[in-house]
Image (cartoon, rainbow, N blue to C red; front, side, top):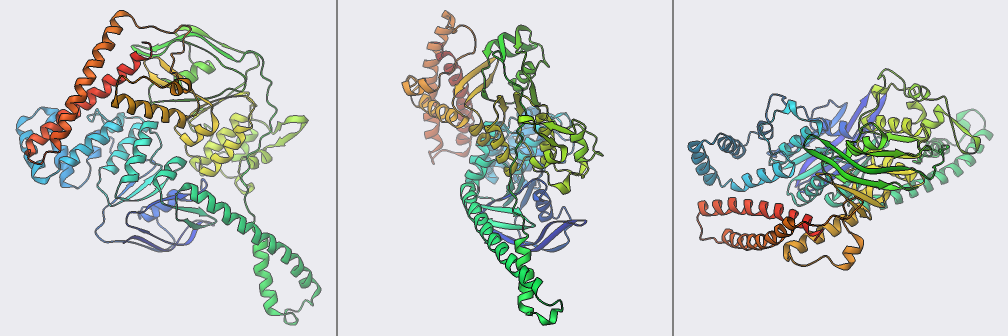
Length: 625
């Protein structure tokens, strides 16, 4: 069943054509992604499809009576609304009733609660209420009384995502849905969307997300769309085949062009004396032969400062903000060619750690020792801070006209921009005309121009397209200095780092050998085993691979009180598992009334929540038992 038909869609800005004569369709249940280079027009295409952006020509037709929801990159929400009001801002009776129900709970209004309870039962809407609570909980939007104006950019993005997911839409349009989400949230969203019955059209740069969720990928390139019926791996394979075939076609055309050009030159100038068909064919061959196949190569063989024997040393560092502990008795010595990844939920102290590392933040206790030869290059999440009226090439020239390279060579500002995938015709563009990804790339270029030997990248892949990320990865693989990466891009982390610092909060950091996927596999396996049998110890193989340790000089041991707490926890967890099993059986009993099932569901939710909390505490204590 066709949900969307697009015919001959064309959009341009002045003389620049973004896309021309696009014709495609999306059927019910399809999960489609659009990929393209930054500035190619992905977001503009989505906005055209939503009739939020005018287009030059073409036709867009949706199936009648389908509900559509759109999450933009920068959602415009009413700043005066609360989170609760924003996420329930839908004209759907069930959601409006659940909104009233939540307000009644917050106000402890028993009469309103009783009325809502009966209406929710009559509408059979309790499953929607469970979904609401699940989504708000996963996205950490627990205080729904907060106003939108008081939220951070990341929180606003999560509110926008919750609103779209709760819309009960048949067709979801999502523009960068994974931006500003923790890794746990991304993995949950991955699972949620891959099992959703909604039809989806999204723009995302998360390559694992593309792999797991999507069944069709459209690449927007050279003003047209190329369709690949498969996931991201299939797309990469078929794209390589297409480019290989195109290269072969261009090579043949160039050989033929040379022969035909010689023939054209030898013929009389009067067009009528030549074979008209051959002359016309020559024009087509010329057009193909002059095609320029773009090769993404980001090379920067800068003259890096040599690393000395001392890199960076943390000696018994303590850092806290009020009652919130970031680091506790933390010691660590960085080594040559270190490739460290940093992960953890928002608010656990990742950015503070980076600021301590580069000296922008002072510890409360201990000291950070930085080697004399260290030259930091710090790429932060903030957008580049330059005058928007400047031209791109002037931004580079403000740093240096020429950049020294290895073996006494040098690069001009213009050559440097080309190495960073800025085509010559974009060098004199104004900064305000750049896309978000292009601004990120320009900022990264400025960081690398300082010839750092200790590179710190805080969310470097945000707003970068998958092509720019691939060439950045290639550059970083050849980087000979120390590399520290904070990123929610699991694909990027897997390729770039060989061990992780996992920030768990309250000053606890785990040093994990391996990449992010290895870590999650072991953690997920361990978590399932704990739930199945809480007394089964970690296997020797797991213990060898993953041995969580608090990074301090001495291994901590349990005191008497903690040993007693551990014993009590084991008994309590066993009891809760039994209660959980009973409640699960009760919910499966069709003879129970709606009110009994509702009460059982409420209690089960509390039991599961308590189980998770106590399991985490048990894991924490068992590490030192």
